[in-house]
Length: 393
Image 1 (tube, helix red, strand yellow):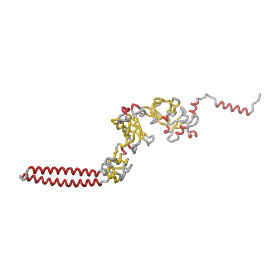
Image 2: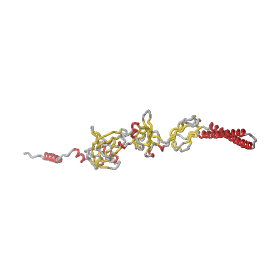
Image 3: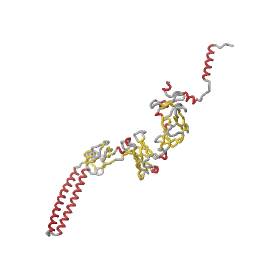
Image 4: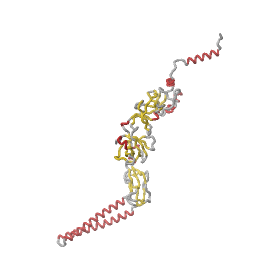
């Protein structure tokens, strides 16, 4: 029998050690990956809560942000525009001059009316003195009763003319005051429609003033959903120009008549926090009236993953990550939310945007906000550490 060479002996020993190192009971691949992988680092921004909402399927309101206090100032006299003191966007206080019209012709009318009033006053005083003398003479029997009655008629006619002259003066003064267009309340000029030199007629729109502190959501809702509406119901809406920011309010008014053409009903919702309301009128907005009868568990669609017909989420259960199958209900395209009919409970924590190769049962380690957990979740793999800082350790 040949004795083994030293090189052959060393090779056999290496193979034996390798076999021993692979001996023992084999582990399931998933369990092994969960045990060997470094903890999954999760920051607060990587997690969202399962919430409850009554907005999905609720009546939809479309409209715009409008001020409750607004005034369309129109010309009350025909004249030429001499001055425009305020322009679009400028703030005004009650009584501030905004527009001045040419008062020349109207002042001439006032002067004429005042002169007519002076003449009427003198005529009335003259007929009063004549009537007093006629009464004295009548008592002395020096004139007939007919003469006294004629004097009373002339006095009454002069008195009527005096009253008419006073009214003409008041009217003329009002016309003069109407050549100065002033702010009816504290607010902002929203739309100027005339310029210096324009000739305006009675009734022409000159300028609009709004109160930016009275903004509210005014919109229309289908008359078919009118039975679900009540004053005071919560309203959630988004405004064009403010991204995904959600505003909250309460239904303040429901019109008593529907539009004959569109069959929609006008409604208005007040902001819960007026300080957060936009200061610009006319912005498009869209929202829903929240209904207590429709409250359900909802979750943003980004947290839900699909595999064939099945849907699941990654739930944080203590220090472990669990893959939970869920049953989905109605979807809200506007809000990007889906009703969860089974699988989760109110307040459950799930990964906000799961991606990569996550492992059911993996260990979870919560870290402070901004610690880079978002990138760790995205790059997690079952066979390697998920965070670079954990791997370096």
